[in-house]
Image (cartoon, rainbow, N blue to C red; front, top):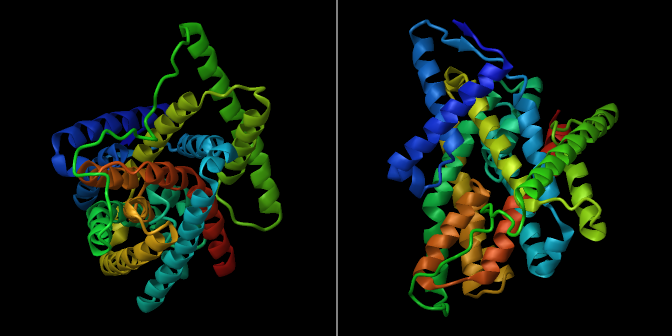
Length: 399
């Protein structure tokens, strides 16, 4: 058995990540349904470990001490991206869409608790397969998994990734058809049946007109302030713990990151580079997911297949039905229908899922600029804040 230290574990995670990219390029299904590359690479390693376990062999033991810092770094960058000034660009629409997403996240946990009760499982199973993995995706599910384990839910990491992966596939499959039904049912006026180039709001674009020295200093500044936010966030987390609140490790750093970003928006003192912060966050997330998945003990999922499948069916049916509510609340027009498709995408998976669903729709029916402003802002940034509070609230109520 190999004993890997922290650096060797990250190195193996990086190799698994590169393997995930190769598989996603080679297999069309993985590209079509936006299965994240870190998930693919990490799961391949986890499946190899599962096969070896069934043969009575342990391949390696990982030192995952750097897994949590990578996770906290990612969520800190999400906090830095949560700019109030962005929300003001289309404030009323963003506010309504966020309120709908937040309300549905609560409903996802209620559904999950019902499924847990039906199958006589730990109540926290319902929260984990609710908004923690449906609206939260793999990152949020895995971030909260240690807290669920501490509260008595065995195999929380394996449950989290299985639920999140199933949600991503379901969201990719049904988001487009749900919006298409709305467009046809209401005979909505569309911009036209022709391909349209749509800017990806999550795409990293290097800032023009900067010298190499300026880019290096901007990267250094971003890394330093992310580390400072993580440092201060750890103290905030200790304060919450002293009050008896169960919170994931990233909440404090996320709040500090948001405060730094909005102070910087007003004063311009720091001059943080948003593309650089996003780049750091994306790399941290990819490595975190890859390491977390490699360390999964998939044999712990025995007996969970039926509850997980039933929960996914009910969650999917609920989000498709709620899509009509989103459509009506957002204006009952073509943009609102596209937003409905995006809503399905990120409430069952990730913001990347939502963008892919909406992109497919606009390539067929024409551009939807309002949808591409509102849905990514809520799905990529603001829902993570409200969802963390919702999950924390349910956990503290149920413990």
